Image 1: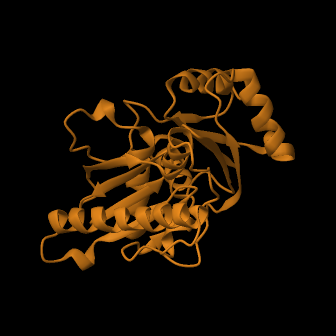
Image 2 (image 1 turned 180 degrees about the vertical axis):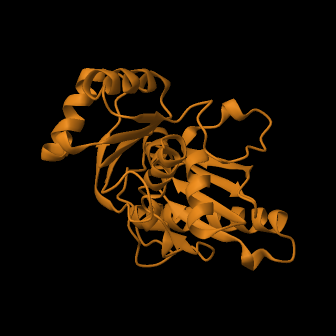
Length: 262
């Protein structure tokens, strides 16, 4: 079984695949826990092994990434200390992903954006736009040949909710659910409307602009893939998202593992 680990700024997501390689590798289980940048390798291992339960002894390989530099170090220590005998791939410069990076400084790129590009192109083809709803909302652009072309970054939904609650004395931190109408009849509904429909409009506006630049005259051929923990909230309100891939990063990690471990 292959353990995949995606350490993001807000959450750590684990996935367990039934096989390391091949099309028959199905995602058996996934878990999500809160990211703490102060977590040590031993604390991380204790939590991971606790979540895995009896599966912990059945792991035959590990593929992982971290967008948090402090936890990248701890991730490496954890793998070396608790699973030293297993083949592993930790996505960082030098690891083969098969994704050409047409970016001014590829070292600036988060490993999750590269892995998402690989998974989206492999699963859906290109040209494509990956919209990753996380701490930030990432718009990653994939060419028809599977190249990472660049993209756009915007403040994430939860960051915006927290900022409104902390900077505006009369505005509350609200649960992000669909209000009765776009015209809110209370402060809570007005906030929900602005956040939900506002972010949906942001997604559609940016996707349309990117698609027009990416495939002039053939914008309808551009695949738009939504992923990330908050994606389900926006899919119903977006007019441009064509696919929902909740485990896109985990699947990309499995693909990177397959490219590097033979």
